[in-house]
Length: 383
Length: 67
Image 1 (cartoon, each protein chain N blue to C red):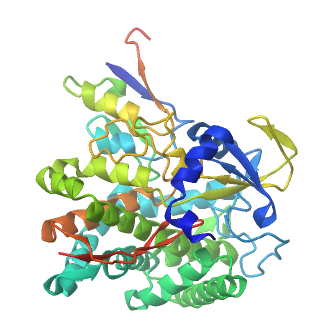
Image 2 (image 1 turned 180 degrees about the vertical axis):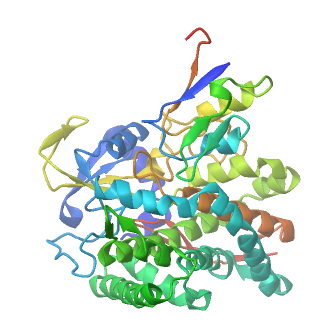
Image 3 (image 1 turned 90 degrees about the vertical axis):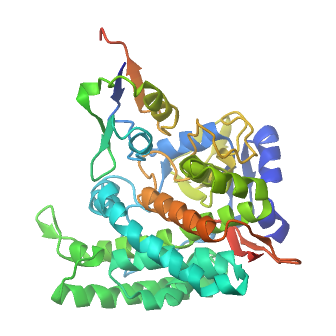
């Protein structure tokens, strides 16, 4: 992908929204890019014409062979009803309000511990040393897998999402995740613990135990979807505060703005774009789409649509009306959205409490990942 | 003030619960239920208006008391 596009896709999306809101590209096997709030949310709700059987932004530009170990893909994200409906009901209680309150103490302790590790040095990489270290450990806790494998998990997930266009790398990351989950599933069939994999392994659906392929798919999804998405949101928010000292100072002085600020960071720096597959020859916003075409629901662009948001390109910390769709909309609303919100809020609160003043290091090379998940991979700051 | 949540539209974002927990309860799936039969206790009208304005699914609506 073009590095200039990854660093600043917004100007291009702003132009497309006006001149060509349903843009077609021959790249990546042919795809439609939606950039208005109206089109993106319409597509997200139109599950009959836009299937979730293919949700990857990058890759799959040729016929993909079904994975024998994951015959159901990664449900519920990569499925349509009815599979979507019952697998989502198995997953959602793990991200309920009461469960998330339970993870908050751990997130706060973890954030403090990470800051302890670098505060005396007067500098840190806000993305690599902090943002990247938090979500992976919470997800490990939910899955019941060891947190000391965090770097390994992060590596696999980056292979799958960030390097999706390097086929061998994406495949090896995916294979490693499935291989690891199979081991964990077998262990828990014999010795159930208090974790998501154990519960799924011992759940009865329609009179039958849940198929191993479904359990592996759900566990793989939680790992893939719960790590670099939230890390990207935390990293982007810290990058914003490092480059906008007025906003950092205001959040320190008015901590009661944190809830609306979190929503605003999610809106302006939405990490995730999702794809859909067109199920029949049809017309959408006057454009002829064909069965099998890919449609990219550009949530980050939708969230900067001036038709939907006043001062759409600005971070307004106390924005009171914010129907952003950083977590999607419709039946595939991100199952972990409120876990992500909690992690982002706690990570920012703890950082600002200990490091109220900070800025980018001189000559800092901020690097961004783009594609399915957009966020900074390195944000060197001094304080 | 009386409000209702459209069950077919609610997708469990739980923004209403975050903004007005005194009025909107959520279950383990994130789905919202209005407490007190939809009747908003006095003093919470502003919070409820915020909840309406922040629901990404446009699932909350004010209903006239005569309905």
